[in-house]
Each structure stands twice: as C-alpha cells, then as structure tokens.
Amino acid sequence: MEYRILGRTNIEVSAIGFGGIMVNNKDQDKVNQMVAEAIDKGVNIFDVGPTYGDAQSKLGPALKPYRDDVVLTCKTEPDNTKDEVRADIENSLEFLETDYFDVYQLHEVTDENALKKALGPDGALEAIIEAQQEGLVKYIGFSAHSERAALKLMNSFDFDTVMFPINWNYWFNENQGSKVIEKARETNKGILAIKALAQRRWQENEKRHNYNTWYKPVFDHDELAELALRFTLSQDIDTAISPGDKRMLDKGLNILKNNKDNLELSPGELSQLKEYINMYGGQLYPIP
Image (cartoon, rainbow, N blue to C red):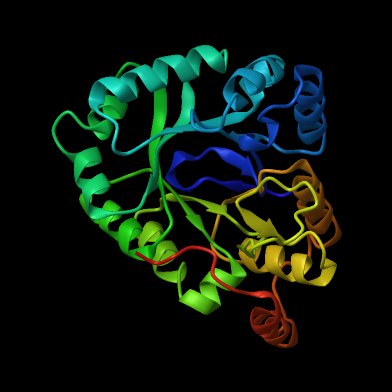
C-alpha cells in the first residue's frame, strides 16, 4: 500500500480509502470481515456518515479493535441547525464506538443557500468548531461536487480538508477538479478524492449487476478502470475513497498493487482515456 500525508493535518493515509456506505444493510459478521480484510491490505482511512443507512452502527464494532491505528472521517448535512449537527456528532460517536473523529465534514454542499446556512449563525460549522474545541473533532473539512461550491467554501473558511470528485470523466467532460486542487494546495489542505472509479449516471433500465451505487462504477472494463484510477491517483491528491461496493474496493486495491510504481499516464494512455469519454462517458453530476 502507498501512503500519503493528508495535507497540513500530517496524518498518514492510505492512497485508497474505505467508503463506509458499502457496509449498509450488511450482516455484522460480514462487515467485520470486510474491515479486517481492508486493514490487512493496508487501508487505514474509513469514511462514513449518518445518511448512509445503518453503516455507522455496523462500522463501529468492526473498527473498534483497530481504532487507534485508523483514520475515521464522518460528516453532517450542511443545512442542519447547530443543535442538529451537535446531535449528529454525538450519535455518530456512539454508533461508531469512538470518542473522536480525525476529520469531520460538511457533507455535499451544493448550493448557495446550504453554504450560507452552514457557515452562518447557529449553523453547522459553529457546532463542528465547538466539537473541535472539546476534542471530539481533530480537523474540519467539507465535501462538494462542483468547483463553484468548493471554491466559495474555501474562500469563506479555512478548512483543513476538501473532499471532491477527481474523476476522469468529470475532469475532461465538465472541466471540474483542477481548480479545486490548486486552491486547496495554496494552504496545504488535505484532499480526499471521490468517484475515481465512477463512470456516469445509470441509464434507464440498465442492468446493474447488484451494484447499489447511484452511478455506474467502472466494473466491466478493466483497462478503463485502471486508467481512471491511475489518473486520479496521479493528481495532487492524498487518498481516493472507494465506491460504495466491496467489489470496487478490491478492484481499486488490485490496480494500485499492480501499478504502484507506474501511476502517471503516458501521453498515449491519456489520449486513450480521453477517447473513452466519448465511448463510455456521460453526465456524472449536474453542474448547478
């Protein structure tokens, strides 16, 4: 496993992280096995949140034996009130059987109203800052899905980390990602990439092969999956959180293992990846 430093936090994180939503609705024994296998392969960062079904209550017992050796990130919805966020934090700590979060984030800030509410009086950020002052949260971050929202957030508050889709299709098709990385690195913010192995939104009546992700992951084209993940990992990011399916986590770990000394794409490979956009791309996120 390759490890990188999560920006100015100085936390060492695995290049591929565990998307906690994948344990939603799984039996506890199965979740325990999934977590143990991931840790055995070198994964040390786990991301989860209250909106991921019962994932927190399943991940908590599974992570408990390893808590001192892993990085745990959690989140809250940006339009929650200060009191609602405090309740989220306390409930998540209980479900996850921990007494602190390494990173706590505003989740999926998409529009101006959510941003203003989150950063305004009695908003989500106030609750997170107070939790940080009490030692319940070490570092504060956010996730966003458009450059416009991410840049506004970074201009409004000095967050420690940024979670953003650094995705081959989104990058070239919608020109989303490069400005976020550039802005984040000006103050050495940690960067958690998401959707590295996402392809596009599911098409109507498309066969999903039991993948419960809201987007189609690149599960059926090995060359595209390899190029896509290498593209993300070769950008100036710290970790790529896996899609919400263990099969894709395993695929990502295998790709990294087989290409650990060869993440940079050659000019020919980059051209091939861009050609795949016309063949296999499509809308991932609508740009608000």
